[in-house]
Image 1 (spheres, rainbow, N blue to C red):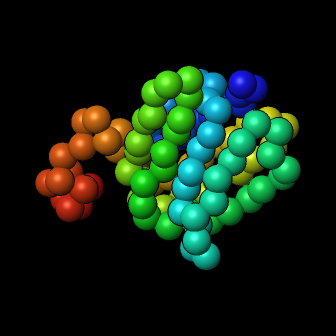
Image 2: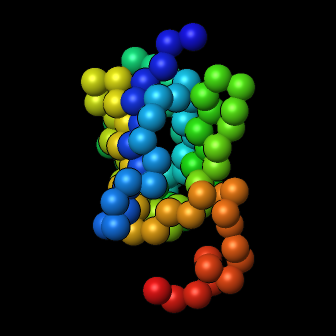
Length: 97
C-alpha cells in the first residue's frame, strides 16, 4: 500500500514523525480521514484522538486541538499538547500545564 509522511508537533518539538497509510482526526465540523495522495487540506482540529494506521500497527494520540495541513503527500499536525495514548495518564490530561 502507498504511504505518506506524517509529522505531529507541539511547541516542544516532534511527537511523531514517520510514514503512515491512514490518519483519522476530528475537526470542528466532524471527523475526517486522510489517505496517500489526499488533496490539499487545512483544518482546525478540536480536542480528541488522532488515529494513525501504518502497516499492521495502530497508534493513537490525544490532542488538545490544533491545526492539520495536508500538502504534497505530507500531513502536518500542530497542537499545543499531544499525548501518545500508550503513555496516557488521565491526570496529565486534566492537569494544567
